[in-house]
Amino acid sequence: MNTSLKLEDYLSELSSSAPTPGGGNVAALCGVLASSLGVMVCNLTIGKKKYAEVENEMRDLLIKLESAKNDFLRLAEEDNQAFNKVMEAFKLPKETDEEKKNRAKKIDEATFEAAVVPSRVIKTCRITIPYIETAAEKGNQNSLSDAGVAASLINTAAEGAFLNVMINCTSLSNRIVGEELLKKSEVILDEVKSSSEKIIKNIKSKLNPV
Amino acid sequence: MNTSLKLEDYLSELSSSAPTPGGGNVAALCGVLASSLGVMVCNLTIGKKKYAEVENEMRDLLIKLESAKNDFLRLAEEDNQAFNKVMEAFKLPKETDEEKKNRAKKIDEATFEAAVVPSRVIKTCRITIPYIETAAEKGNQNSLSDAGVAASLINTAAEGAFLNVMINCTSLSNRIVGEELLKKSEVILDEVKSSSEKIIKNIKSKLNPV
Image (tube, rainbow over all chains, first blue to last red; front, side, top):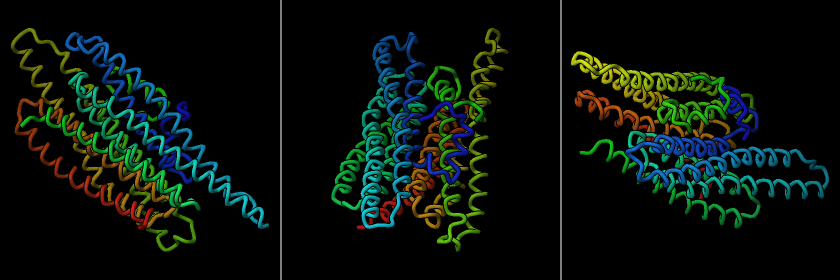
């Protein structure tokens, strides 16, 4: 993803009718924001006397979260590319039978790729959510709300990506391939969702013990 | 919020131990991203023959969503300012009894303001979610997944903001004032959450009718 863009330019491209960025890109960006908040919690923990016991764990966690952030950034860019390929395939000539056949094949291939990219976003969410859990449990407790925002963002990243897997899978000519990817993605989404809910519930009970 | 920042600079400030931006700012940013996706759906609907019937409604909706986007942007900035004021209050002198009293008062006032800002984010989410619902129902159906990502983002904006209301309310010296704001915010959060879930459920059933 082109992060040298100004925020205002990204937002106006997003708001426009330009093909990219769209919802798939934003879903991956939610993963970037979540990982960044996780890194922040690590940075607010490392070097603090009170948290000396988890210092090494937090240093490792920071590296893992930086890596997740980069994976999400790459996937955000891949989502743009995949969507552009679908658009290109739709523009192929469709005069002769052969052209029609070739065009349909290219659309199908590009659409499948456009479903695979968000399915990878969901997998990256599953990898990342335990990191957020550790940050919430062992990181600086003054940053509990930040870890909670990160957990909620990972859920939206996965949920948003799943809708993008769906919209692409359902338009594939080979429904079986689509159904398979959809099923697998849904299982992982459910895991991510319940982990995210658990983390937020724990944070709320720490913030407001009754 | 300073949107003339490059995305990469925003992300590195977020990841750093600098006091702002933090989770409250990101929660408001989720509202910005959701509104922008809503505007995108409007832009992909307006001018299309197939959607001529809803053309005027989409034009109105676009204006409302642009306004929501600006509200969220302002709140994202206010969240930074409110947090900085809390930090400043903590730095006040605390030698004499009078200084201690004054410092405690200033911390309390700043903390209350830092709870009020995210409570306004939650209210803005309640205003925005019906717009997203209309975009999903009547907007370009090729953008259903984008409307769904927007609905999920509004939920995270409200949920993330609520955690920020919580962390600030629970540290107020006057717990009654805090409890009141927290209760009110929770009622609105629940509304937003169930609306968001309803929208996403409807989108899923349209995308994959069984």
